[in-house]
Image (tube, rainbow over all chains, first blue to last red; front, side):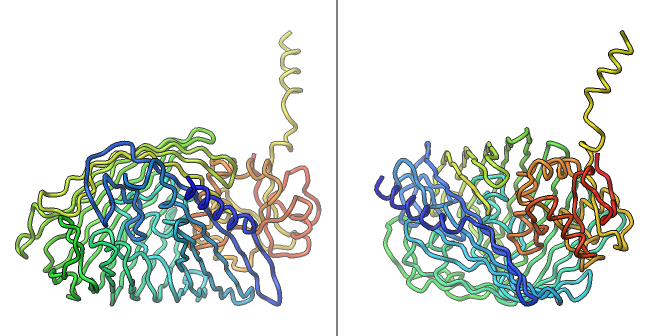
Length: 397
Length: 138
């Protein structure tokens, strides 16, 4: 309770002076400032035992990249994982329309730290072509660009079966082209860059926090195309990169909970290539929204490939939204490369969400997740089957 | 009796202008008319319409939620909260900036009067000789 009060007070102190929207113009430059905040809480309703990252399970991981974990050892109600405060600023040269955008997010009110999510310059080369240079999101999924902005999401947290990866940002260059083909709006993005993650949150879940795993995605190239017409939107993305990981301190043996040297070449700097394919279809017709997403990652020569999918439907009624969704992640063994069919990760989640818009800029959401850990008998760590009740208050300003 | 009912019905209807919203530009602006889709694309930050008019300043409101609510409902069939959630996806990804927000209709009309490259929306009852209506939304 003391931790809860301290955390709430901390967030309140942070938010109070910042709940303003700033906009000013001076000497040919215009500045806009805005922000978003989410206060999230969760309660593990039930589940089966397991253990990950030194945490007592059943566990639910709403965001692998940030090592956000709801776990049964955290007490009756857990505040930290989804709670965050984001601030964004854009300064634009009004004549040339050259602009610089930055976004910083304060996370984890138990041990607050800030992460730089966006820092890029943009310049409209022509009416249809815009150049971006700097740090951006990797545009893998429908909501990847705003995966931390609770008010932009129909859920209390990301569907972890799709949205949780070891890298979610990149530093590089991208070009956006916008065109109109008949009734269709066509937006194409091409990108190139790289991403290096130190002390990966994603790998802390699998290897333990003491593993201190560094990740590199080099020679990252790809793009995405979005087709939009009235109530229908289709989105496809392809990204490829070289990847490597180094578990600097070794890994935690999930059975004995002791630190041991990493032996898997996958965690010892071996460079592998990955080819990521995603697609999304979104139907937004009157009061109904249907969103389906697919993911496939091909890693030539690796012991497994990734498949994930999600389908969800939302019904709007005045200030209310009701959503149901089902999502699944399957790690499929590549037996030709020595992969163990019984040693793969596999989980399935069903979610029910109720959202109530409190004002035009804020909402309250409640979500019930029922996730089944279907990993093979040799797969470690074990999340356990888990039922999670989570609440979120979101606000943009 | 039937005539009395018709009269009652007619009298109970709001004046036509009360339900009408005018999308307006400066009277000297080259834009003569816009379709509902073009205005929707401009206010939803999508498509190529705004890119065809790169200097166009698009105006919205800070302090007139009723008019905003009517405008966006007429344009998209979505509530203000849904519109703001949609814009959160665009603006917090750095893809687009939401329309410039002014305090009230007087400020919008004044801004359009001063700047030929400005587009806004006002109650049809408030239009004046400084602006040209490019679309009427009922």
